[in-house]
Image 1: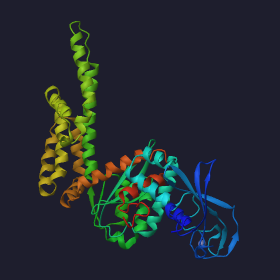
Image 2 (image 1 turned 30 degrees about the vertical axis):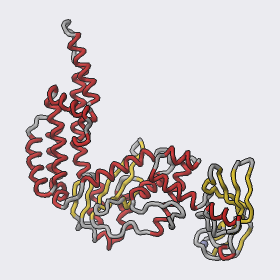
Image 3 (image 1 turned 135 degrees about the horizontal axis):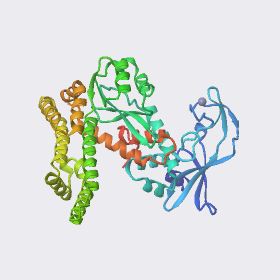
Image 4 (image 1 turned 90 degrees about the vertical axis):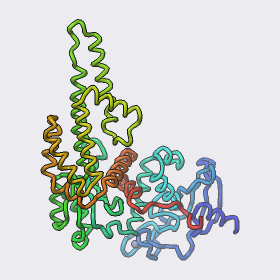
Length: 427
Ligand SMILES: [Zn+2]
């Protein structure tokens, strides 16, 4: 292979002709000058159709390419404009980069792969780019994948959820496929028009094939689903039902904590008493994790803390058992789950903890939907793990300027069509 062609291979621009290689002292970077082969010349950057040349555009341009060893690298080429019958005057297409962007395709694909597999700091330091640039790159990589695949094909049983991604009530509406565990759709907003957008892109035929829809009890979701999929069975999202219990438990814990904190110690004898209640308040505050976590995930220390709660505050411990009881309902599912739920409701009604008495009532109104979930075996583990993963991504996406970048990250990571690293076909 002639020396110049090796440079093209190294940078992933082998469809082009390498003309020169130099080192830019100012930029401290390798610059590989190339020209487009004649068969790729003068094509519209948007539709790739061959068109007449319009002008030289803004002269030669550089695209950031993958580093060569320790050194940054750029591809340099002319960027003439063409006159497309459909798209007007546009910059001509180049085979090594997406339309009208400053990075090569290999660079973009590497960033997208990294964004779905590693931390924010790693992507930024390794690729030497700013986080908003990562957002722009993953958005165009996702658009490319979207053009090639149909994420909404074959949907039968779906879950709809809203996820807060920013303070100040900014939400995403997300749709997951219960059968594959994939995230299939997401959009900014949490209202009827947003969700209607999903069903509109699904189209009437495919809406009619949806058999089950799980969601929390939000009215806007229920109404929109009824309008587009009147035949579908509405299921309660187990993740949310268990979360109601976790929230109720947390309210009980906070009451107990506040009482312990304010315990008056004024009657002289009681410096020790006051210290003891301050200690109780402190331990209770830190017991939050022990109470929230699933018992199988508890550390030894947290397990001891639970034992301590059982001894010092039976009411709080009862609240904990009620939360776990409800989780158990979804863990067993089916007829056994329904039986367990019936026992749970009668227990919660009589438990004398107002938060759980109220929860028992809420569950009563949602009973049909919860039974549907138990009957049709929608896996809570799957929903819970997708939910957790999306929430982790929203934290990672903090700093993206546009929710599109977060949506792209979520779809690339959880949508089943992961970006691949460049040039891995023969390894
Ligand atoms: Zn065109």
